[in-house]
Length: 230
Image (cartoon, rainbow, N blue to C red; front, side, top):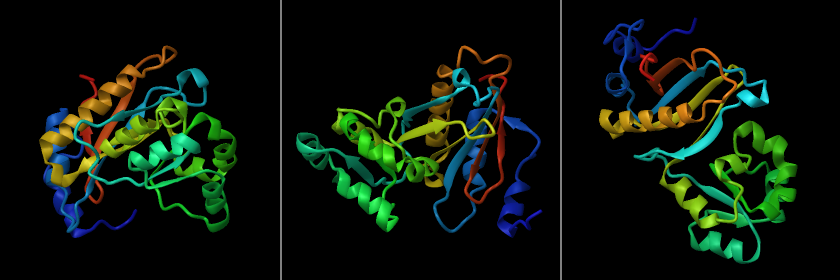
């Protein structure tokens, strides 16, 4: 078991690690136990009672957090002609087509945090699936990143849009802000995310949907959220 830092151990002593807390108190503890010298990210880890191996139990979507993520995202847009001009005018950091795809493939270039593509560009972008997919960067219609409304998609990402999807262990991991946001804004972001995931519950899901919810700062201990009221 890895050795914990002094800051981590001191933070962990602030509360009972086995206790479950309502969202407001959990958010407060996650912020209070952020002890690093940098502005730590607050993350939430949600284990769902579904089996993501089955298509009818997949949980995936996107939403704009009420208070944003606290991170300025660089966005790459795959588009041509008028849509490329629209992307540039809307504040895209990078715009291109085959030239951008080649740069990613030959230079291993990934100086961006999100990718948007118009539908006609998916023939080009699809070939990048092997490199973009594992990084969570592959555009997808369900998350609103394959669209003709490039301006809207860009504004949402810049405003704090986050994607949520199951990993192989049926857990969703999402960054919901910075410790500097304070407890209230973190609570609002957490509640908005939980509401969105609740609405995305597959009809095929049986039994308890929210198995566990844990919130923590980058370097801090996990705080368990009471799932009984979710």
